[in-house]
Image (cartoon, rainbow, N blue to C red; front, side, top):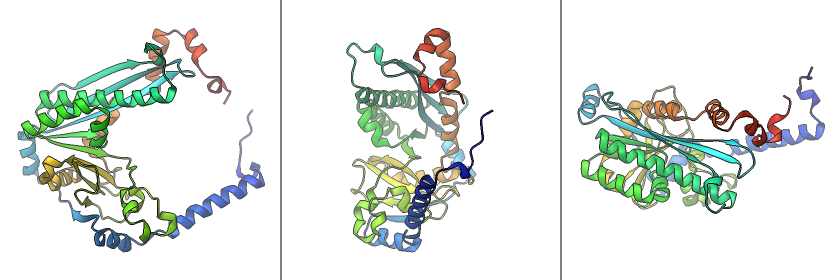
Length: 325
C-alpha cells in the first residue's frame, strides 16, 4: 500500500525554498499600492475613466428580446495521442441564441499533424491550431449573425484575436454587424495585457513595474464598476473597458468595435445585468455556451477507442501516463 506523504516527509532544503517563495509572494502583496492610490494614478495619467454600470430593467431586457435577443459563440479544442506528430485534435465552435426558436450552430473539425502534406515544426503547428480554432469560432459567429439576427453578439475572447487569427471572417462579421446594427462584444475572462503598468511604470513600486492589467486592477473597482480605456491607447480599431461584474475582485475585459463606441455604456450595463453576483464574472449566457461546447477527455478517449482501436491507442499513450498511481 502506498504511503501517504505529509509535510514532515519533505526535505529541509525543499522546505526552505517553499518558505522563501511564500515570503516573496507576501512581500509582493504587501507592496501593492493602495486602492485609492492606483485609481488616482490611472485617472491623473489619463489612462481611462472609472464609470458605474447599471442593471437593465425588465422593459429594457424585453426590448432587446424584441430586437433579436442575445447570441453568443465560444469554441473548444482537445487532443489525444502521444508524442508529436502522433496526435489528433477535435475542435468545436458553438453558437447559441437566447431565442429558443433558433437551432444551435455547431461546427466541428478534426486536425492532426499527419494530415499535412509537409510535416511542420511542433510550435508552428500549435500556431496553426490556434488560428484554426479562431477561424472556426468566427465562422460560427458569421452564421449566428445571418441566421439569428440578434441585437447583441458576444464572442469569447478579445476581438483583436479574431482580427489577427481570422482576418477574412472578422471583416465579414464586422460588415454584417454594422449593416444589421448588431452590437458585437468580445468577453475576455483571462486578461493577459500589460497596458496600464507600461504607461505608469515609473509610478509603481519596482515589484509591480511589469504587472498584468488584471493584477493592477484587482480589487480596486466596486461591483458593477468599469474602467473605460482612453481611445487611442489600446487595441486600434476597438474600444476596451475592464470591468468588475460580480463579487470576484478579478476584472474581465470587454472589447467593442470602434464604430459602435456609442454602445459602450449599454454593453457594460448588459454584461453587469447578465452576470450572476456570485459568479466568476462572465455573463451567464457565455457560461452556458462554454459548458456546452467543452470537449471532455472521456469523449476524446471514446472517439479514439472507437476509430483507432484500443491496441493502437496503447501504442500512442506516453509512458508517463501508464505509471501506477
